[in-house]
Amino acid sequence: MSSSLLRRIRIVFSTLVLIFFVLVFVDFKSLIPAKYTNALIFFQFIPSLLKFYSLKTLAAGGFIIVLILTFITGRSYCSFLCPLGIGQDLISRIGGRIKKKFRRYGFKRPFTILRYTILAATLIVTMVWGVYMITLLDPYSIFGRLMTYFIKPVVIIINNFLAGILGKFDIYSLSNIPVKGFPLMVYSIPAAFFLLIGGLSLTKGRLYCNMICPVGTFLGLISKISLFRIKFNETACTRCGRCAIRCKSSCIDFLKPHVDISRCVTCFNCIHTCQDKAITYGLVSFKKKVHETDESKRKVIAGSLFLLFGLSRVASGQDKKVPKPKKESTVKENRTCPVCPPGGVSIIDFNKDCIACSLCINACPNGVLQPAYKQYGLAGIMQPVMDYHKSFCTYNCTRCTEICPTNALHPLLLEAKKLTQIGKAKFIKDNCIVKIEKTACGACSESCPTKACHMIPYEGNLVIPEVTEDICIGCGHCEFACPATPYKAIFVDGNVVHTAAKKPENVKSDIKTPVEFPF
Image 1 (cartoon, rainbow, N blue to C red):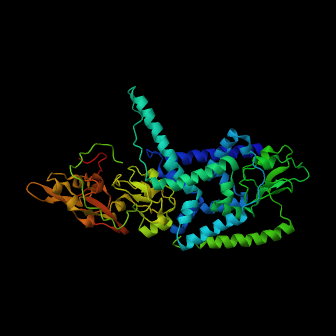
Image 2 (image 1 turned 180 degrees about the horizontal axis):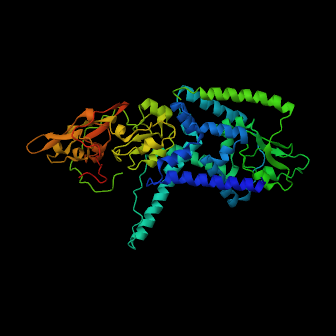
Image 3 (image 1 turned 90 degrees about the vertical axis):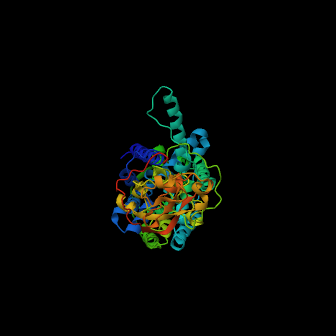
């Protein structure tokens, strides 16, 4: 297979992968079925590994295929399947257009101590503390957060702009979508990684992959014993240095000549640029000396795999104006526990498996899932949490449980989800406008899909809410509907461990949740 064809295949394939991932994360209308999203994420290393560890089934073993692929072809995962790596290639190309010297990489010594220290620290912290460092450094999660917090809002703004223009010509094929922001603190970490990775990619190529990324470092260890590699023909090489200049991994020392296989991402740029045809990609020939060296390397890899597999278990509603109360509420909501999404089983189980990739936040049709910044503590920053001041959990929706790549949210049948109690509604009478303003309301009762929140006689002709906790599932319809401000008269307090609610009486199983505000 010619060098030009290899490089062309890499460019076409990686471009399609990047496009598909971007579409998944900017799909604000949930047009892409979950099965296609799951198939795409199957080959993402960290999500697949965590899901396999949770389910103990080969159906979640995409990472095994990545390991086999790395053993055969080297770090091709980083160039062909990793959306963050492919995105860095795109930024590097843009950098070369801006200034030619940005594309003249040259050989650089590896940051050996730094990258192996980060890999070891990630493994140790994961075993002792949980997935916090994986959440921060996993390339798939970083890419997901960048798409969610920065790219998706831009796409929605463009959609709204086009919808406004088409609306003037009575064309309504596009609808206006509200742009929902997140707490300012949540943007700090994605913004920092965007500046770091974007800056390094623009000027230094794949430096982030070969200096910080623990997935790249780990796969680099395996690639040292890969069967197919970049090879030099020393007799044909004229030491012109073109290959080193074009190597975005800065791993080619053309003077020796030598390729640092642990940093090579098999982009084939070196083969394409070599005019002397001195560089090829093919099956490595093991000499006796190399064989002895490889045995020691295999022991290192085996030990790393053993350590890796020994991971600890710790490892919107539509816009509609609502009449505001004349008086402000005064009693603060006494929340003792955040509400994690259905399928999370418990706060502890959810926190240890979630890598904060933001895919569920993107997919949530109502926008009730928001990135946490203090609800779960430091270890759970950017993991999804229910925010019922923003919206509510749709009664007939299981979208987040269908697409979670790590099994942090276990798949739930719709009927099971309708009986999963993720929290309990708590009523604060002193905040209710029925008591404060002596006026009728009932918004919470009207919106409750299980009728756990219902009205009882109060004073005269007035009725006031009451909650039957046994049948409450903590969906947040009532909290979102409550017009009291700044503190709600009814709110959902999360369950530390999700439990089963009793089946509501006199409520049909095909309840339709109103899309508009329930007044």
